[in-house]
Image (cartoon, rainbow, N blue to C red; front, side, top):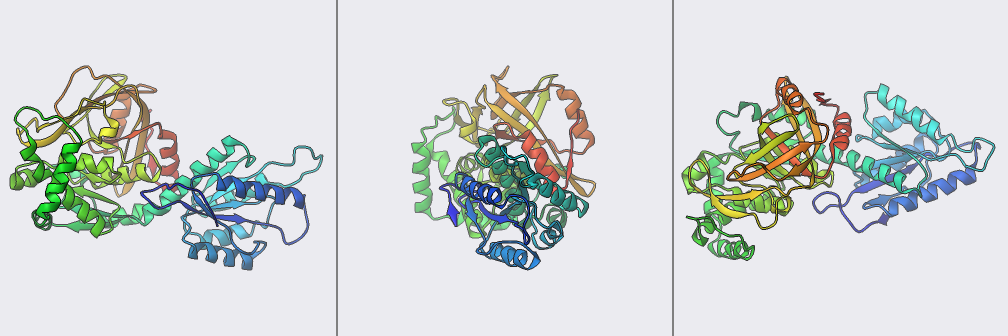
Length: 458
């Protein structure tokens, strides 16, 4: 086993099976094939993952079955398949039958100084890919010399995408209550969520969550309040340190639910019941959790929680959920009551305040950091199927300030009204997810791997 000292999703490393399909009979340039296989293995060792190689070479169906069984027992999340010299094309169907996730077919180049065909590696990968497509099975493909940085980026991105699909299919989400009143398009069918995305939804009643909030140990609450004070966030008028204890109870309760139920993400119906019962909104708690890489989506938005989970699985971070408040030809005004992670926000602009509508604490009034690349995206369900849309953008200084989380995004290719109209006609809810960095192309590939519709809208 080869390891690299990093992880791709919330503490667990990306474990990759390395499958080299060889030849049972002589052909092509075996020395070049061995050189490419060694270089590819060493390249994986330089990526941020763990690589596992079967103990026996793969040359036929029996050895392929044995190798895949070994990789499955090793807990591999994804699989890279290399044919350094073209192998038996009949093995593609066996691979499709035995490996559930999308494989990454990596083809290596011909020997550059040889007048003869040395590998047919790309032909072999192409053959496997065409068979997978006709079987209705998704896959990723990469091509290039293992020593080339561009090739390593291709392979790394493809493996991250493949692993995201597998881990999404294993994910477990929690929902406290249901979607907020009137937000009917954010209600989910747990069986559709499982059928389309493989996600298991565990539901909790609001009374259960009330009990969990109230059951938090007083000393633990006091200790957590001290941690919040250490953040040094200023208070708006009418808000003070005495308001922190309730939010610490929210924070500890959501953390307890995430860890105790082994949830990958959580969605909470934050209104009207929580402020009515406890006199506070949970938005500071949600912002803190997001900065720690945890997901607690507001307003019972389960699909929004899935969007944040996708961001984490792709290594982009959990991001933030926002309303699409208004727009013009080039820009979208982004706003929500005040729960964005501070890592997305302008340093020094955050303060703890009251909700703009109810004058009730505790929200984070803050401005999204300007001149940063972001991705505006959403995954949602409509007409019994899931859809995904994303656009690259950059943040700029807002034209005016709002209480809560406030930002202005300039879309890279403009035409915002046309995109908005297309999304409305596809049934997209009013929430979008903001991820740091540009990931629209990666998310489009993810939609293909998940076999869900991509909404371009342009």
